Image (tube, rainbow, N blue to C red):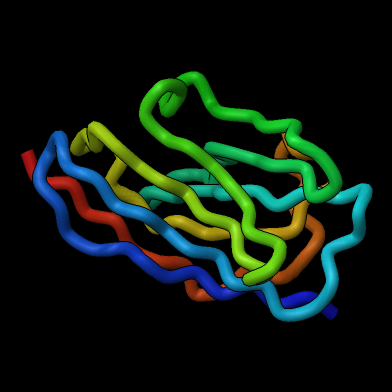
Length: 121
């Protein structure tokens, strides 16, 4: 059983930055990954960034490349999503989940509460 808890969301103006944290309670298998997903109201939950737990393989959706950075701190059992140059279209609830792959949306755990990100224009 692995639980992941998201935090760090908030309201920010366009062009601003936020850093999301995904605290992991339990053990992530070395052949798995952690992904950050987001969902807008009425929309599907999509993978925006993923990082393999064993190595430095990283994935970004085209919509966030060059603006978002995913990283992991295994000493803190935490995965971060640094979001820069935020746009109104980044407004969503952001979730993290254990993932079978670093670059494909195959979440394997249950979903947490997520953290709301609002970007004003």
